[in-house]
Length: 248
Image (cartoon, rainbow, N blue to C red; front, side, top):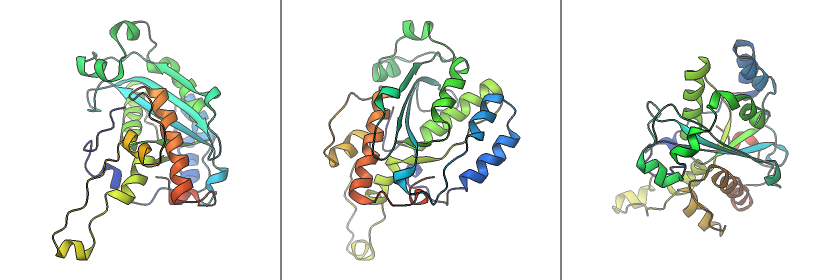
């Protein structure tokens, strides 16, 4: 995924309380028209009081033709089911999908998905049920929630006329809590500027001494994001931390 620090300057720091996701899903299940969305929302969401150790999760990454949700589209999706204790790599899913927009030379260079690959790939609408099944009942783990949420929502809007909502734990946002906070009063008085620390996926993993993986492959980045969350919780939180402390 195109994990750029300046993707949206405030995206990783944006505040606001998370909705009551179980209640929100119940309302969305009643309102949804597409049977695939109905089935997804009927699986529900964990309570915000649920300890992290008991939360079913799915690490998710999408690769896109670019970063403009108004004109760019998804070209691949990777999903890895997980819990705080275990990455279920054997149950992971990966799809290359055919966008309605052209690939750019830049995007091909970044994610290595070529024109010949997307020519024979399905449209996202054809695999939508499989994607939703892989995410149903789970809290989604991402690195920069604006990518996965906005692009999946736009993809569904254009195909079935309905969007998609889901709770996320954003590992980039968790890093931003440490490294993108405004300087304290003393530092401001002394004119000290905060040290720039990258909160991109690879540098974040390095801080926890996690191994380097190939970047910009949806399945590998999903796996990397899931492992990063496990490390973040081990170092900074607790398995007993309630879900509401982390999700959005």
